[in-house]
Length: 93
Image 1 (cartoon, one colour):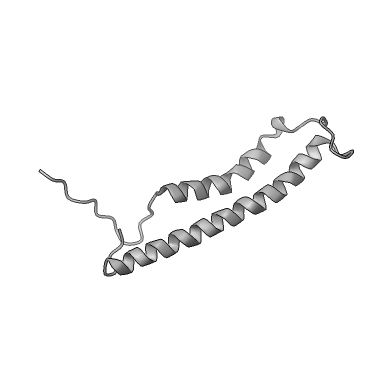
Image 2 (image 1 turned 90 degrees about the vertical axis):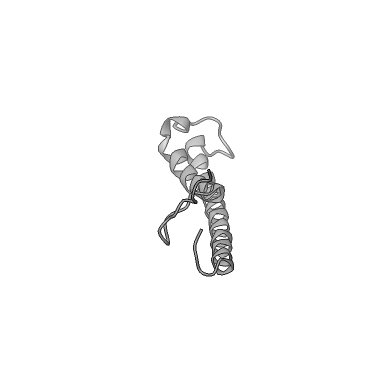
């Protein structure tokens, strides 16, 4: 006996591997900055700047890159969903 496909209301959230990667890209900077014990030290020093400061500044750049990656992946995901909906005659899967 075959099971009927799961019926979701239109616009219901869908968890896909791409969306998990997007969430990780956006969540990683929060974890890195909230875990103060990992960077609350002065050594190693980089060009005279204590680790505490240059670590935080590095995360400003890393966060920018991760947010850009998340944005590109989100745009790609939305285009794929839109083309899938139009291929299915307006029915979301």
